[in-house]
Length: 135
Length: 489
Image (cartoon, rainbow over the protein chains, first blue to last red):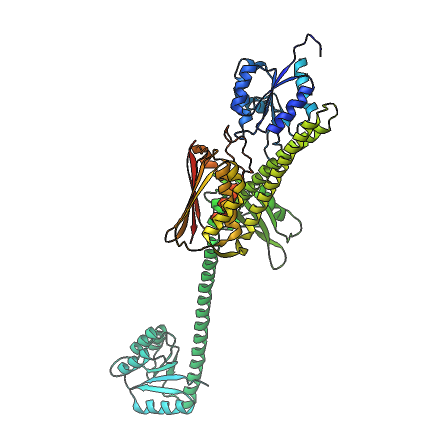
């Protein structure tokens, strides 16, 4: 990272405080700044206050779709329109919750920029962020 | 002759009457006589004679009138006309009226016996024909009854039944089939295959289009896109002629929608279980990875903290697995439950003792009021302890510090009434609705630090249901919750 380059700020939202802390630590270790929130509503307030460069949101929090709801709310804000938002979930095809954000139709109702599966591979998460920041 | 043939002689001439009577009786016949036409009609129409010999000329009534009357009443009696005044006209008239033959007087005993024997043979033939006709009619009736019985049986089956012949025409159906397939009208003999869903047509065609007769049955599951959600299981079986060729195919359509729904619920439950199991594993795995990561190089203090937090997650995981085992045990247990008479006070005391550490930790005051001389509760001790532990541990976990738990136990004619009230965070109406769902946990800023599997109240509900009891919940958000339990006495 070059000195004159601004440190990128990531918002992490997860109601599981253990996972939240772990991901925070891992992302920080790669040179990012991390802010956290433990619920959808807290995440929304944090997003508006911190204006992060990217957000990674757990899907199932207060409700089964809290992550999607937060994502929608973020994408409706001015800053949200230019910020990548990733949904983090352990809900996968094997567990029967069937969704992805690969087709245009899915992207239309899941407003996120990508889906990351738990247990998260930090390299995957970072490479997605890197790709986005390079663009 | 095991039964004597019955003969009626109608003649006004006494000598002839008695003579023929004697003659016939000596030949083994049973004979009655009538001295005039009136008596002849009386006897001949009342009794069932095999043969009647009627004199044509009598002073009161003419023989043809007697013949007519007898033939009308007893069409199977073989009638002879006997007369000394034989004429062509009277012969024709008698035959027209149903006389079998004509005996001209005078006659010799041999001639007479010969005629009577001939007549009796005729009578036996008539009776035999009559019997056959009757039997045939009875069989026809039975066949009709059989068909209508079969109809009733097949109509009463809730599965749909269709039978098609080897050219695909419908030869039999019941209304359940029409209903399931959403067909408004079919008529027998109509080509049906193009009216059936593709999957069924395909199955039927396996039989109809095969060069060799297939003797196996095929079953396919089909989702019928009718006016409602309907899953059916369709079994096709061949109907084979005695010569081995294919007569047609029987199609039985069974509704399996309910079964499918249960299957879906089961798979949703498995999905949720998988998700709930994966989460703590992910947390523990994450901590271990961090501890093992040389680049992160975290200090010993932090390492210890992470190992402790991992232990807590693993304990939670173990509780979850135990809860799941309890639920599955409950599903098979209902039959081998260990019912005994439980002392109500004792069971509350021991449960509260078990929870004592948590109660003290939060400084909660427990008030227990049990009706005096309460009868014993007939139930499985483990189940009741589990039920009370789950409700009381919620009342502790979700209570505020130094709150209270009030337990009232009473009885009415039929039930034990157990009210457990806490001064905890309470439930919103939306939360209340979902309370007994598997894995549901009220999640808000007040519950963030409360651990649990989300199965506690599911287990409670299942125990109470298995005793045919009832549980309801009253709650005011922010003030507290009361669980009201009814268990049969």
